[in-house]
Amino acid sequence: MKYLLGIDFGGGASKATLLSETGEVCAENIIEYPTYYPKSGWAEQDPDDWYAAVCANVKDILEKSCISSHDIAAAALDAATHTAVLMDGGFNVLRPAIYWTDSRSIEQVKRLKNNGLIFEQTLHIPDTIWTLPQLMWICDNEPEVWSGTKRLMFAKDYVRHRLTGDYVTDYIEAEGSMLFDCNKMEWSDELCELAGIDKAVLPEVVKPASVAGHVTKKAASETGLCEGMPIICGTTDTVMEIFASGSVSKGQMTVKLATAGRICVVTDRPYPNRHLVNYSHTIDGLWYPGTATKSCAASYRWYRDTFGGVYKELDAEAETTAPGADGLMFHPYLNGELTPYADPLLCGSFTGIRAGHTKAHFSRAVMEGVALSLLDCKTELEKIGIPHDNRASIIGGGGKSPLWRQITSDVLGIRLVTKKHSDSSFGSAMLAGIAAGIFDGFEKAVSFCNKTVSETMPNYENHKKYLEMFKRYKKVHDALAPIYDGEWQL
Image 1 (tube, rainbow, N blue to C red):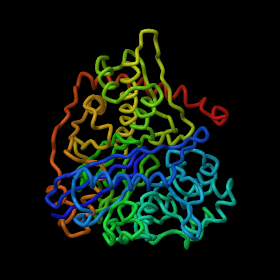
Image 2 (image 1 turned 30 degrees about the vertical axis):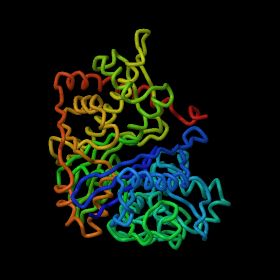
Image 3 (image 1 turned 45 degrees about the vertical axis):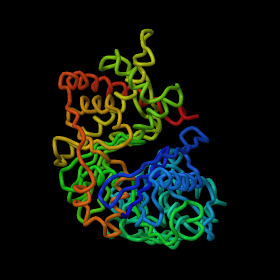
């Protein structure tokens, strides 16, 4: 029996999934790590935390499954895009990685706003989520770090480098850097010049299913993996979730409740639009343009960590309250917002608080606020006119909550399909299986490995109520947005 290993690096944790050649998940494991917030609006992660997580994950997976690492045919990694790791010529990390939710590069974004070349080559408008303005901030504010930067990697590529010594990235990750010409599918001279970066600093670009390298002796001793085992390049977490959910054909849609929230549709071309994020699919000729809300499950995690409790208990309490949380409303703009505002200065808020509100109301309000933000996203997709199915696969950790699934289905007014497995580490394990020749292509891997376990139907009476609530949600945004200027951040 041969096995495949997929490892994801998310906003707050790394998850590993061990998949057998028969398509069964044999073991899963999660290791959490922190995101650091040294200043208001900043968000950073320590690359050493990612590598420590992969070492712990592999050892726990092997112990749980009772298999030998010699039986793992291949492994693939994935992570959130945009997260650059700056290194010197000896591949030593020079500073913590700026996470994509960081909004410190506002001034750099302002300098780039009127540069039409950026949209032409990247299909996106400048925002603090992209690597380009983040690098410009480092150049402006940390010249000693910038002058010492001789290598630049992205999160999953850094971890894979620690495993194999390779120096590559995939084209979907490259598309997320704002340094890559999506028309020519190569690093852009003009965009690199804007960042003040030499293209020689950037890694070679390969396909996600390419074998990037093999586990070194040192990495084998640190992780428990077998020396010489092939490691697949891998790609970004969202496309792996989309693949894992079964969205491999035009018109299929996903709703993501993860650190960020997204609604994506599989298409046969990109849809350049200021409100959309356009990325290639792992399947040649397909794309998955989508909308995004910055703080989705991140909002619920922040709420849990700040006010205490565990998710199941918070869910149970929230379920005792009626839709609408008795007038209490939450806007999930903890790190600014993307669709439809592209405004990094927006702040989160609870409004409509009354003396009768309890913690249960606040818990429900957080879930509903995120769902209403996703309705903002869905509304933009419909304005653009991207054809899609009238149902969606729900992906991301937040989708494991029955209550949150129902709230999201009610708010969006669509059927949500839950697959037995749909997280990105599962998708990466399938990708490793394709690269190793165990699964014969993307469509067959999905049909062989993943099954539907439930469907959540919208309550249309609740949907009508939420549509009325959405009008108030928009009014609150419109009223508060003007006050969140630069002075508010001081």
